[in-house]
Image 1 (cartoon, rainbow, N blue to C red):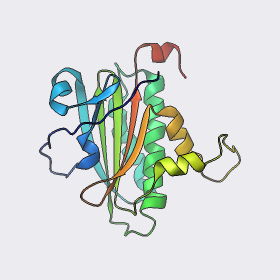
Image 2: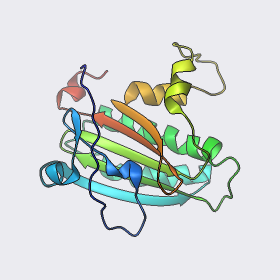
Image 3: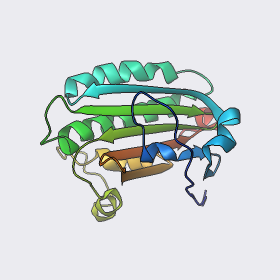
Image 4: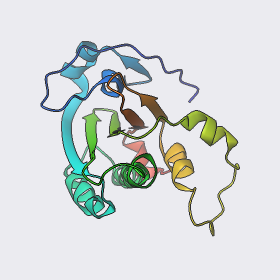
Length: 188
């Protein structure tokens, strides 16, 4: 609580997909550290998926995310991350890719660390100022509203929630959720 987050660049990693910019930051403990400093100790699993701009692909994305539903991730944390992923993906389809071709890819990466789960979602829409949007939204949530609750839900469930423009003109939503075994016994 009251942790300050700092960012440092990590070296580029080889990949068939260009997981740039947003992927250059890795969460560990209470700060972001250089990729080489933590990966050998903290990285438990990393997986990527690429789907088309189609709300129907949500089932495929959630099925793919099932691979992270096991210890050390407490079940309540996995459920929260599943909701973050679903909200982030549907926002990319409905908002970021609103004017894009249905063939436009959305790329997702999930990284399981020994103490956190990182979710990255890349879209190719226009840039969006997440911090300003969140700051201007009402504090409470209208349970009867047609939309607008997803960003607040993601913010409440994430320890870190960032949206940034990458060097290759894409946007990356980064959500980080820390966990310990106490999360299971004492959900937020």
